[in-house]
Image 1 (cartoon, rainbow, N blue to C red):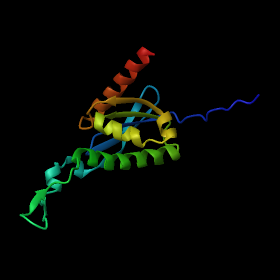
Image 2 (image 1 turned 90 degrees about the horizontal axis):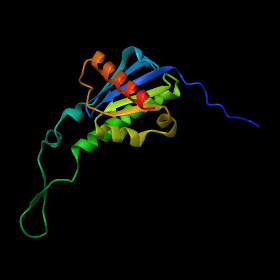
Image 3 (image 1 turned 180 degrees about the horizontal axis):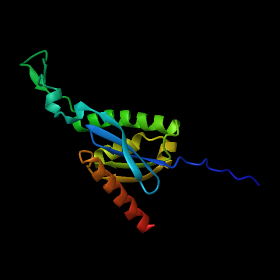
Image 4 (image 1 turned 90 degrees about the vertical axis):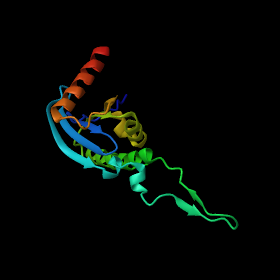
Length: 161
């Protein structure tokens, strides 16, 4: 009889607080989340812009073979487009960290749009190390406040189990 053992996971947790414009990656010791420190910040300036700021030249024009020209606006959703693009960047960094065994546990703190975009892009191995994901917009808070939110959420889930 042979048993397949799971490899031992790194006792470091990465805590990711993100929205469409900013992502902060913290490292802490698992499971107490002590030694909480910011290790990287990712910026997405487009995430702060309104859709009309990106498309500042206005609506396009279309000319039919007869009659006057008509304006049109492409049916794109700026919020989703910027979230998708930034989620790709965040997940690339998380996959790099996982592949280099920089962390063994992952906690996500992000608003629902960003949380969904991140989840949709996670590989199977990355999904397996997600310990907790919280639908909350807290990336603009101070580091110690983000740490407190992460600890409180983790304690609440531990109490349920």
